Every structure is written in structure tokens, then in C-alpha cells.
Image (tube, rainbow, N blue to C red; front, side, top):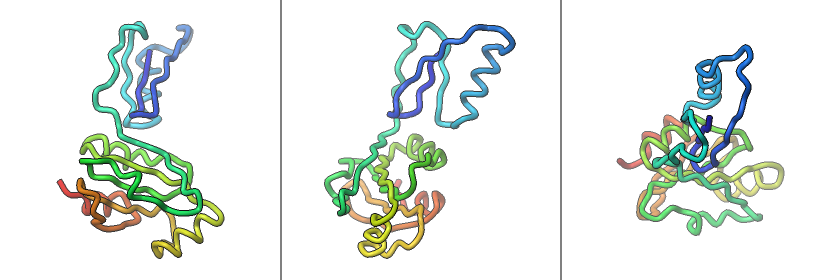
Length: 150
């Protein structure tokens, strides 16, 4: 069995049938994150997904150089937050074909974020259109969805 979680890669699981059925295992893996797609079969014959999520983890390095990280020709959501996954945003971005650029913020980076963008709490999102023009900011996935051009 193999599951895919966007561009975060694929994992091959091997298990011995004892008390867990294959169907139970598939349901358990898919419950972890709704973006995961489980395909059962020989790992060498399972097709790679064609709708991967354009997701990149970028480092601030003391300054936020956002323009150099925007995806050309795609709506790009820059997500500032902790190192946890945001499966709602990832599922929406995968469905809509948006790109996500995540910056993990902690310590001094929080001070820099507030100084540069006025963001006092996390998560904090900035939305850029297909031409790289800033379209707005938000704190929830719902706000991001409203800001993103279709």
C-alpha cells in the first residue's frame, strides 16, 4: 500500500495481516489527513499522483524575501505559523491549484513578522495572485479562500 500527501512524498507501508484488515488500514491512513490518497498494490506499479500539492517550506533567514518564493502563474499563499500541518489549507490549495509557501515562525522571527507585516498572532496568511501582486492577508483558511482569485 502506498499513500501520497501532496509533494511531501509517498510512503510505502508493508504490514502483515493479523487482526487488521486492509480496508481498516486504508481508512485509518486516510483519516490522518484528508489530502492523503491511498492506493493498494505493488509499489512498483502504483501510479504517481498527477495532482500534487505545490508546497514548499522556506526559511526566513532573518528577513522575509517573499517575491523570490512566489509560484509563477499560480495563486500563492504564504503561510506563517508553527511546524504543524494545516490540512484544510492543503486540501483547498490542492483542489484549486494554488501554491503554498510556509515559513515557520518562532522566537525572534515573530518579532520580525510583527515589524514587517503587523502580524501579532499566528497563523498569518498573505495571498498573492498569479502575477505576484499582493491581494490581502488573513488569519483563517476561510479568509484565505475569500481572498484568492478564481
